[in-house]
Length: 547
Image (cartoon, rainbow, N blue to C red; front, side, top):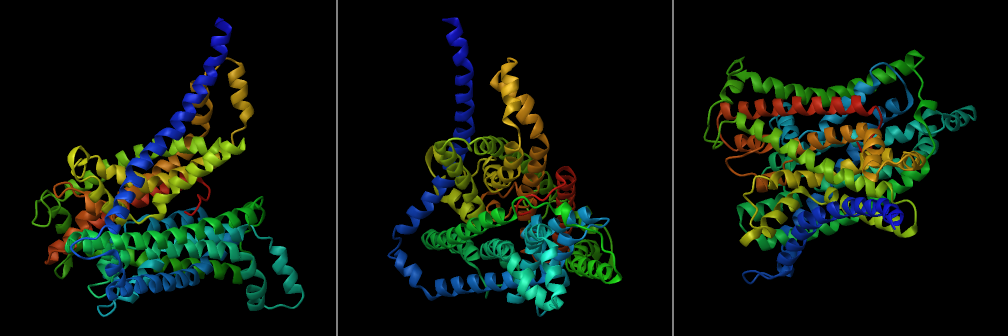
């Protein structure tokens, strides 16, 4: 009798682990993503003040905003690929000193808050170009170039160079080899990168809000304007549904292309292809490509630092000293925004690591029976949805879903870390799952035979082996949460702003000191973000999915 009870105890414990690994992520996403999303859909389908959903859709303003959102995203995608292709080639073909540092620094603009990117371009663009479509396009190239370089460069490193060499021996010149051999082979990675860049440009918020001016707005910005400035929640909800459909289509295409990319690149190792540049021409190509991209990304960031020190005709630390004083732009001393951002980002990271880590465990171990694979695939897809949904839509969904009775959480201090964690969880899952899948199941079986309980097996094997991946995931979650703006601007209390929200408020106030303080806060945020990314790259030492 006792033997039978003991033999069932591990099975029950394993069942408990499965319930926890599936249950907590599902409950979290259902409560803080599906429920707010359903609230948006319900509000959008309900007529308000005599205005129906069809009236909003038929409004010329809606068509104009949708058209501008689509064409600027498409053009941003093309320009980003053109700019990123030379660096993708260099990082995908050559091994040289400082390559890992270059890859790490390349990611910094991607994880920077969009308000910092907008400030950087305001500092370097001419007055006649600092606002409008061209400024938006340049900002999107600056922001998304790392996506293309990481995806295309990694895929390029897996291509067999002998194919191009064979074409050269048959008399094909460099341009013909690029057109007829290399680009067709790169097609899966190029289309996958293009889909992702299009998605990020389509849902752009902070960049367009600051650089677009009153004449140019994307769906993201219009949702914010209708909800916050015009107080028309019905129109904002309808526009959110339109954006959700467009984003859903783009995400479906991106995931399909990503699966093709994984299939085509399976089994190729970049160390078999990378080699140091040997000839003067190759060294010149490496130096020119990385140097040009370094200037494109470095000059705006250096300009942010310079503007934070500008004071009259000279330079001083006046803006930094002023961060210790209360101003009309904020209800608290500006340095409180730094503390708030760090606390919120730390809390969001803890949530994302716990929820995302458990979900990664469920997804990684769901490769056995067909039912388990289906359940794991469903969970994986559900957790990816917040990444495709717009941050503004998430923030707006929280506002209208948690607005009455015991569900009125809008002023709760924990609501900001929760919405930031929603954005970070997909990155945690993507980073941790490959490591957990690489664990030999015989290690767990051997530990169980030696009498280790399921909890001890998880602690001694899964957690120890996955510790570095969890550290990398935590670093990226922290950087992403630190710079989140689109949802936080809806939910941050006036007396508890984050750094991106504080920067945005300073920009809305006239005066040279207010502008300098915005640049000072942007510099602080940029430094913290860069340190986070460098720590992550050092801990990971490998490409991490889209980033």
